[in-house]
Image (cartoon, rainbow over all chains, first blue to last red):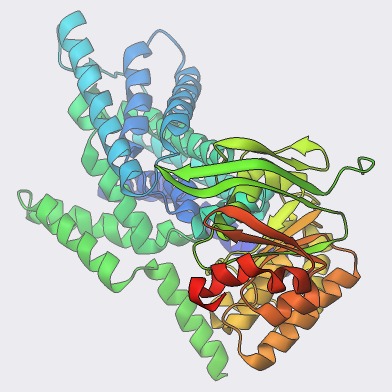
Length: 308
Length: 245
């Protein structure tokens, strides 16, 4: 641990404990907003674990999230909930491995389109299975898991994700991904097994998104494909991570907090124009703050330092 | 080292891009500790030859052996790990990494691997060796062209390559920088590095290379000491056209 990390650690712990106390203070609107914030933080941060350094924009978050949610939907009541979360993680990882091996040779826009298509495919397949084999268009997820438990589970997962990200950032694998993100040709000529490095990170990222979907399932009580595999989710995660800054581990958090609150206001006040306003926000972010809030802060600090 | 086998043995290597034969039955040896020039007019296939050796793509036919070990068609990753390092014709630095990280990138996953303090010390040592006088933490985008080339060379050297490929490393330097650049390669030669140089700067070829292979339209047209090949009629014709020969 570096000197700087040793200084930051107590602040992180304090923030984490403060966040953990939220359900004791309020169990209505603020807790619901808190769940959204932590859910998007975990999703956007795990997305950025892979897409941040490599610059491969994945729109498959909804596919993994949906797989997690449906794992719980399909077997809830048959198996204990923690076991379901574990299975969801394994399925998410397996799906990411297959997709990663098949697509990470694709570059740029082809990869983006494929991942978007994957989420749609998953939604269509699940809908088809449900309507042909079952009788309903959704699944009931009835558990005794309360909102505070969901919140604390997500918060614990967030801590795990930050630890994973911190560890990767210091590892050879993390260094390899940053080189890949800069120049893949240089990466291979430096002896980096680029396909392997990318697949490993994509699997970690997909596994986490599935786990998040599984944890969230009980909140919905009734799970439908449209909701579980919503492409909107994939886009929101990308926008939030980019708004915050995907090149830093703590970047996505800075995007999630303002965006979740704004999204909540937009959805409450302009329910019919949500997508439109979201798209506009996306354009503005990419145009005006390409390195996100984290980039703005870093530039500010650098300028301040050079002036001093 | 495998007794007697040349560092690099290229045999009948051919590469065509949808009909256009860029490298045509090339054959040459690069001995250990030798500095060899690969020269020829623009578009004669020199960079393609370098790309075939470094594994950027594989040849259609022929063999390339590194100390007796066939590497033709292997991935660039595998070839880098076996000990072939290169620089690029148009310098390729890693813009979002620091100078020190740019150099370190070559020393973690390739032929000679280091990590942590050892890696950092070696990267600093190499920055010093290639004559870069900026702090390692500086952003690499702030560097001048020759300094970016220095960083790229240090990145190639940090993996302690068995064969170093320099693709027009001296191109684009001003006369003063060129002198520095030549002295730098001369120093590598003094260490006993095995180097294949693609170059257009003829006086650099004369002062640096033990031997030269000359390419024209993808094929080898001459081989020998720089003085020999530069006096060769066919080489002159390739560079200057028929009328001047």
